[in-house]
Length: 101
Image 1 (cartoon, rainbow, N blue to C red):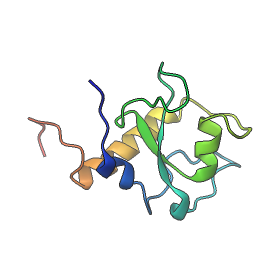
Image 2 (cartoon, rainbow, N blue to C red):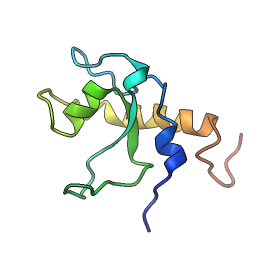
Image 3 (tube, rainbow, N blue to C red):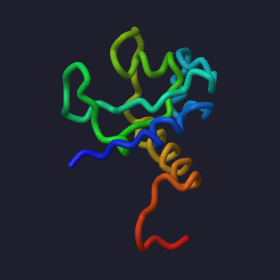
Image 4 (cartoon, rainbow, N blue to C red):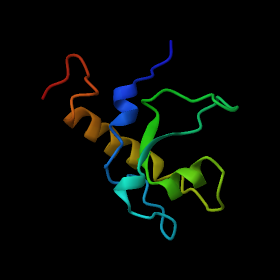
């Protein structure tokens, strides 16, 4: 099973970057995309689940994907995933059955 959603990917448009790498982030919501976190799958065109992804500006995304130099502080990634999930829940795109509101 693979979790992929055009609505989730499209939801990144106009959102703030949740990664916010110091000295790298451009803080420009116009460049934000859903950036998949490396989690075992590797190769061109192979992406992880859309639920293991963050809202990332173009510069943070380039560092995460290895296209640009920079150091990812992997301790910040769970926070970024949590902030992205919070936004997805708020937008009604991520629903957890049985969860209290």
